[in-house]
Image (cartoon, rainbow, N blue to C red; front, side, top):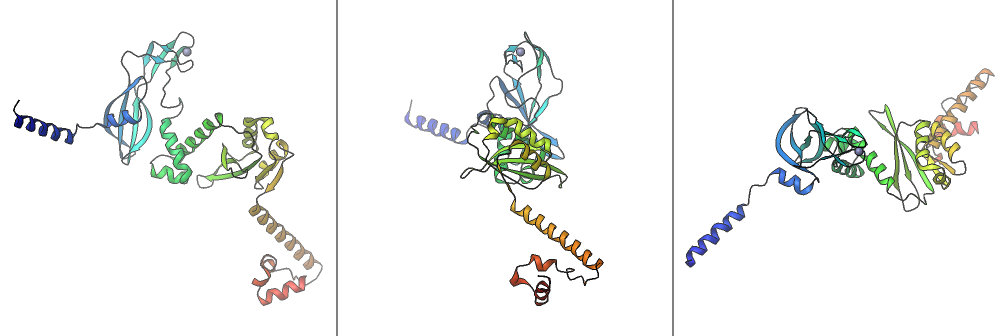
Length: 320
Ligand SMILES: [Zn+2]
């Protein structure tokens, strides 16, 4: 071949490779989230709540059988779902991504007809596992509601992701040697609902141990049941606020632990107690015909000495 022809050919090839082959979203998702036994199909635009979303088809690889969701052994397909199930995936370029998959039912020799096992999500969840991990990771840096807003998902989804990760982690994590725990409550849905969160408080180690719905005695009992009696006996310190159901269960379940009540709540309760005593005293004085000097004195008790006004200082002197 003539030299100049070779040059032209090389140039031509280089120009081609620089431009590259068209890359499909399918190629990208296949690279970052390969699912054994399944392939990705068409990617298309869809609509959800008035917003554009990317819908990605998932299909079983040819000549593969579905796995029984109980024993994970392959079995012949019994039937295939008519409408696809939707699984939220990690958003791409600001668009929500949803995987669509027609679930098969498998007839298992041992378990009969069962819905198939899918490796990318838990049976009940409509969020892909990778997306749950993704959300839970962000939820450590942002508030849960911020996380939900930014990634266009619901607060519930973020909560469930954190819960799932925590439980997943717990089953594989060493919780031995925890001697101090903190109990806290989180309000959500404008303060109408509560979560109880329990974390390890040991020196140099603060980590989330458990999340549970509500803030009832039953919530706390669920926690202690999950961690077991032996584990609970190792707890020497527990820190919580003065929410009665917590106090009740803590007193019952870990009686030997030193219970540190939240400083903020103690102060708030002390203030309440002072108010109560003051009101009662005022009433008593009035009834007995004394001049009610305790009226309008609340601030004298609660203020630091140097912040008192002159009038208040005199009043305080009178009382003491
Ligand atoms: Zn089976």
